[in-house]
Length: 314
Length: 314
Image (cartoon, rainbow over all chains, first blue to last red; front, side):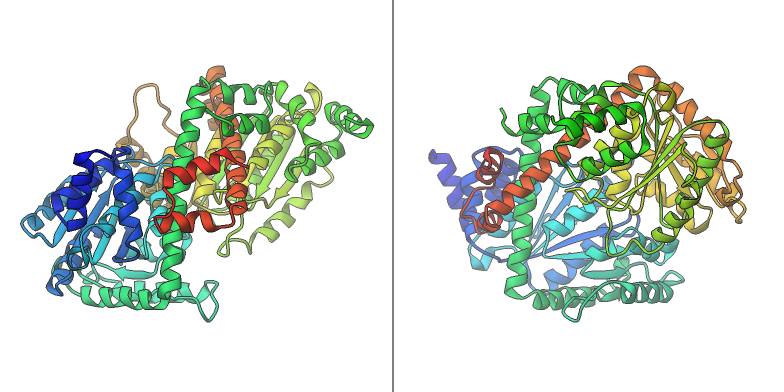
């Protein structure tokens, strides 16, 4: 560790936002200089409410994030927002406009906004996103750290499942339109939701959507200790129903308790380590000249032997 | 290799269906005795049209599979059906009834039906399912091998993506009801479809669904060489439109050509090897006493170091 890195560590620990931004850049790039900072960050324990926001495109995730910032700032909380786009040819488009709207928080030192575009080895979130979350949580002294961290992703499928692995609380956003609720149930997304917001609830059918969601929950498998995600109506664009969402999240936090939160953090670490392993294996497979899998397909190499070869490196 | 194994191999190569069933059982259990059989199977090259069927619950995948068997048998083709259920608490239920219906093929030696319940390390298909596919393709002399292999899965999400990795052709089944087409587009499932069947097309809205799907395709990213999945109306329960689906699949096969098919087989081998690696890593993580990830979460162990530890075994 050389001088500038120690400097950065000291500034990061002091809660300097530019040092935090620099630390995030190092972690996003996967540079070794991020490692001492991560060690500092993680040894600080659980300090932030980490909320992941998921939902189909057009459900208003970004607007809801913005409304959550407003409410949390009014309560005097410091908020970090991490917007991740593990882009696919079909997503993108709207995100730039959404991000520009968030620029209005630029002058507020209690709000830290960052976008990441890193795509994980499995198509969803990357190990680096987990590292960035840890950095956001661990920066600054008690009076300057992030109280809340909001992780918002573009894209569906793998990213949605990954959000649940990365966060303490998963907020699912649906709308009354297009049978969103039923679809979430069918797609197994409801299983990962800790709180559900029926957004755009000024549209027709919002009460029906709430009913559908709660009856779908009643069908699900759960015992007396399990959590039934509260369903809350919101109109994010008008800031309506947002406090109630914040309360539901905190209720879920109380339900988790210290042991539950520690378990969620363990799951996040597991996700990070497994993603790193996956990335290395991909590199090894590429180093094997791309012929490895073709040889298995032709019966020249046993699949088990190929797995052994990948695991033994380099 | 002892006597009985050689015996089994000889009978498997001769096209004995009971030997094939035994080989599948060995591969499903992950037993070493399956390995010489797999070597035989894979060295035979590409012999079967391997079709994966995907679609939301209730779209009629099983009925369509049944109708496909009828049409293919009438054309004198030998057919194997592999039904896979990587079960989740929300799926199941209907599958037993569906499978019972398929018993009507029991007396037909040109139809081989098998169910698997193995769940992959990532929640979708397992490496063993890939091995079973290879065994189905490689059994018997030219005049007795499977002309078509149909892979049908219960469940959504990861399994759907895995089906595309496992097969030569992915048939997506949607219905006119519930905005299935639009949902498939939103969920990125359309990207993996090679042929789309709008099933239950006697229901209202089927022409609108076809229009929605084709206009969604027009929005997608593709160059002049890429394949636009043909959209075909079917009523599987009445056997209507099935020949047209078979034709569309064969058209896609011609589009792939020899190089495209070899690439699909390479992808299947890649899926198998990567799944095996994943299973071993899971075992290693368990051997590490479950404390590995908790130590990362607490900052006592670096995520990179944990990844190294997992990769270095045992």
